[in-house]
Length: 258
Image (cartoon, rainbow, N blue to C red; front, top):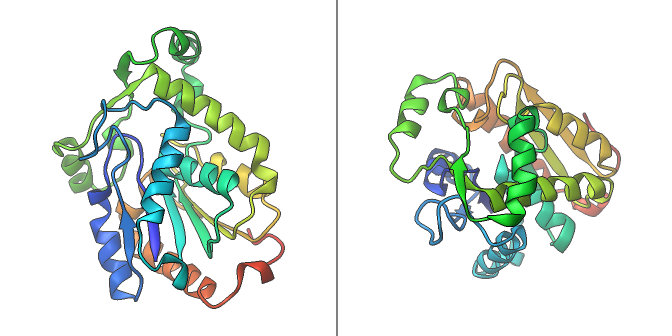
């Protein structure tokens, strides 16, 4: 079983094709829309705290019947990858492994110094004020059909509150401070040409992980490697990694592999 956490501004239904692939290969995919996203409640792009996200993940995971009776993995993309790492660091759940794609530990906000300064100041004063996220749909994939589908998707939004952005900055700092103690087997995949969440997010984090970590950078690919030209190779690579870790106990894995 794979439990998936989606990215900023999108929703879980955009991963239906991944779910179909996994089902065809004897895995199931479970997911939900984060608060303030998709069909879930809440102001778009807003959360009272990042701890609220983690508690939502708690509730969702506990609602899955028979979870502990089968191998299960946590999969996060972009914002969802940050949340997946935070969740594992804070909860240390009994997982067979974690998959992170396009993790946004270094992202475009870092290069916008004025915007970042405003977030750090105003995020404390008027946290619920919403601003454009600045996400360029053309940076998601080289496939024009994916870009057009994203632009015309009524469940997609392009806003984030100042409190949300400030919370993300703080959460990223916490992740970096605790990266060395990440406990679970980890697959980190990233598009080489990702302009939204920079590839060094994955390569730098992989160096901190003391237990088994596999790093894969996909040449020429943009942010959504699961929606890219050549995504079939990504899916096959993911499946091989999953299959290996359904028969290997996480406690027996040592060292780094990247």
